[in-house]
Image (cartoon, rainbow, N blue to C red; front, side, top):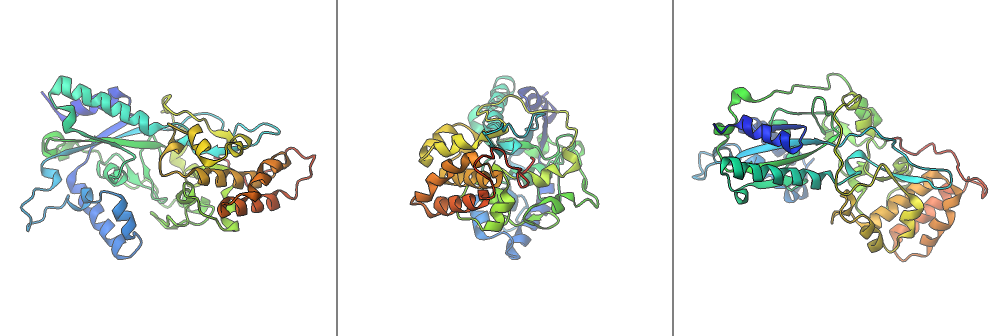
Length: 372
C-alpha cells in the first residue's frame, strides 16, 4: 500500500539524513509571522520578490477564493543532508596562508541533494507510478525552504534564525519535492513529528556574532550579517573588514557557538564540487580577472551565478590583510592599480593592515582569523 512512510523510506535510501512532510496547518502561523515582519519593514519587498512566498501565504484557505490552496492538492516532502565533517578548518602552511570556507560551501551539497531527489523521483515513478515530470524538485531554490522544514516538525528555529534539527544541528542543506497528491493522504497529522524550542535561555550565538547582526532572538539583519555580503562586490567598512577575519566565503561564528553543532555523528557524503576547508590566498589572487577565478569554482557552491568573482577577490584581499603575512604583500600590491574601486581600496586597506609585519616575517600571528 502506498503511504507517506514509504516515501520517507525512499528518501532515506537515496541518502538523506532526515525526511518529513509539511503539515499545511503548521505553515499558517509562519505565513502570519512573515506578513508581520513585512509590515514591520524587517523584511522588505525585495525579500518577497526573491522567493516564492506564495507557498506560505496560500496555505491558509481563503473563503473568497474558488481556487483550492496547495495544501489540498499537493504534498511537500522536505529532506536534510548533513554538511558536517570531521576535518581541519584551516590547511594553511608557513608561507602559504589560506582563506577559509564555511562547511556548507566546502562542496556543492545542493547538487548532491538534487541528485538524490532525482533518484527518489525515479523510484516513485517505477514503484508508485508517479510520473517524474509531475514532481517539482528543489534545493537552494526560490521556495522558502527553511520555513517549510520547520513546518514539517523536523526542525525548530534557533536564536540565530537558522533551522536546527536534533542530531544534525544547523549543519545541513535542505532539499525537497512537491508531490501531486493531497497532503492529507500522505501525511496524517498524527504521524507528524514535533520539535519544540531547542534554545531555552541560551544566547551563545547572539554573543558570538562578530558584527551584532542578530538583533533579537530569531531575527538576523541581512544587511549586517557577514554572509550576506560574501557574494556581493561592494566596499566594506574597515570595522567590517577587521571582523571578517580570514574568511573566503561563509560566516560560521554563530553556528560554531551553538551546542547543537557539537559532537555530531552523521557526516556529509563525498559530493560534487569538493573544495575542502580552505584555499590558498596566493592562488586566488593570481586568478585575475574575476572570470578566471569563477572558472576555478565552476560546479562548486561558489560557482553559483549570484556569487560575484570580484566579491571573492575582495574577500581574499581582506583575508590577506587579516592574515598579516608579509609573503602576500606583492600579490596584494598588484590590485592597487586596478580600475575597480572596490578591489583597489580593499587592497590598500589590506596593505595597511599588513604593515606591522616585517619583510622577513613569513608567519605573523593571526589574531583575527576566524576559527570556523
